[in-house]
Amino acid sequence: MFKGDITSLKIFKDESETSTKRPLELAIEEIPQTTQDDKFDYHETFKEQVPIGPILVEPNNPHTVIVKRIVLLIPDRPEYFLDIPEDLSQLKKNPFLIKEGARYRMRIEFYVQREAVRELTYTQRMYRFGRRVDKMCHILGSYAPKQEMQFYLTFPDYAPVGILLRGNYRVQSLFTDGQCKELFKWEWILNVRKDWKDQFI
Image 1 (cartoon, helix red, strand yellow):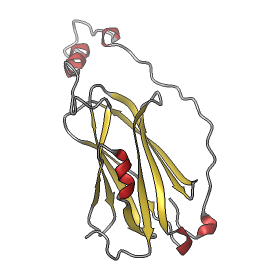
Image 2 (tube, helix red, strand yellow; image 1 turned 180 degrees about the horizontal axis):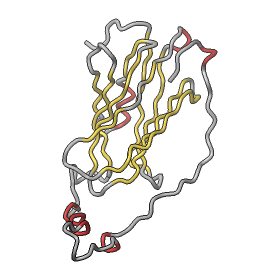
Image 3 (cartoon, helix red, strand yellow; image 1 turned 45 degrees about the vertical axis):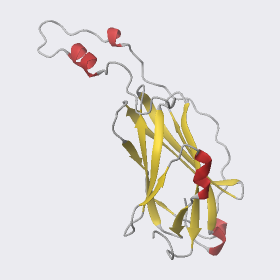
Image 4 (cartoon, one colour; image 1 turned 120 degrees about the vertical axis):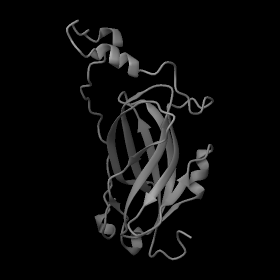
């Protein structure tokens, strides 16, 4: 996001797609065997680390990545939780409330099931009055399926400042993999206010 008055508002145009070189993928059988003289067999050790059978957190949920909660982190303020319901349309009814100019971070808590995700990427677009005013995109890395919750912590950002910049911002959040396959997508609302009054009860 940004700080400043309405003159600081930037409207972003859609970027053209860029191609990137991806690491060579090898099956376990293609990994070179170590010699008999090696004291440590990397090939066998790697195979032992591969889980036998899929790890399922929610067997009836077809998603590989399942986002469960968003947490708003603001210095000297309590953590503000927003649980992700099965009906994602309900998220727009529970906006995140934040004071203008406040510094904040987001913690996105999620599960990875069924299979590993290579180059997990988080993309966030913010809209106001139908126009995109901000975008961020971060490659998180590769995540193995686990029964335990995993999380991603965004970089610090600031809420807009100024009477003309207060109000609701529609936020589109998206997880994709290294092949740009959509894994989980949701929308939520960020409501910028003048002060903290009546918030975080």
